[in-house]
Image 1 (cartoon, chains in turn green, yellow):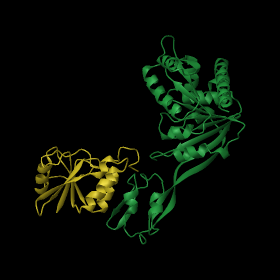
Image 2 (tube, chains in turn purple, blue):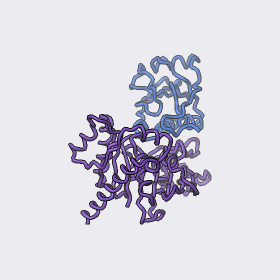
Image 3 (tube, chains in turn blue, brown):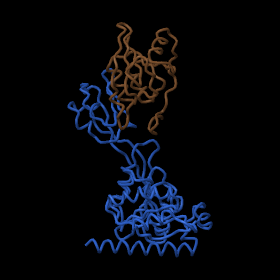
Image 4 (cartoon, helix red, strand yellow):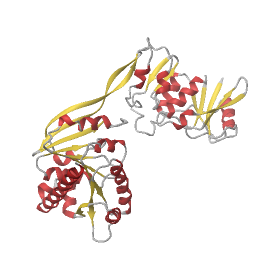
Length: 286
Length: 122
């Protein structure tokens, strides 16, 4: 079972929810797909880390073979190639590794070379297997790292997998939720929060994913995100209070469910509800 | 000698465009024939790498001198490979900038910015 946790913006509580759900599930897998700023590891402090570099393929030119036909220059949608004074220039930082230029080159002057764009770490924290994807600063796309993180063959099927998504609703989030069985949308109780919730709401609907909302930072009084859920008929899975104790635990990089009975209860019940929802979705699908 | 300037409108009186890569047009002025040509900048609508594509177009048009208010790192790499000299414009019109350049009073462009997409710069 794969559960993705997402939100329209950063700081809403994706990591809080996914880390605590993974920790309260005891034997589980936590995958940090927020490769531009992974922070789940700060809470889990995983041990016995194994690290693997992730690279993409970019073109390398053999100047002796290049005839200057410029097919590659004209083909590249990202303008990563220029042909100046009978010399092909490759802009490695601009290249999106589609491989098109290499396929097109009639002289076979272009070949592939590896370029490291980041790394994946695997470690353990109690009985949670923790995966962290790290994209090197300045790289255009973290998708190759996410593909590696979510590679089916890497994970034990018996364990529940919690996917901590990048913020927003762009390609990198789509890649993260693509194979998820269920999506948890985390929302803040503000008008701005509703706007961001709507972004991910539209995304999960587009992907036909079963989903529910966790209302974070709940205070007494009006909650625009709650109102939005009621209006749209969206299932509210749980409410996390805007609470000093939780804030202190979190800002000290502690996992609330491992430190507080109160939060162990809140997240256990959230986990049970999510499991029931996933079960319900899978049985109603078949 | 051919001079290129990014311009907002197809007119000698046009302002210089603040962007090199995404300017709508380039004015190409030939000092020998004193004739002007306006080129549509096909790079303006690029998803990325507009500066590289615009610089390629400038080089392909056998330009010797570029007058621009600023320039990104990747575009500068292409232009330098093409041995095109780069001078910094003032807020005056394209025509005034050409006159000031011909009078030898425009400074060389020294500041090259690292781009706005996080991938320029080392």
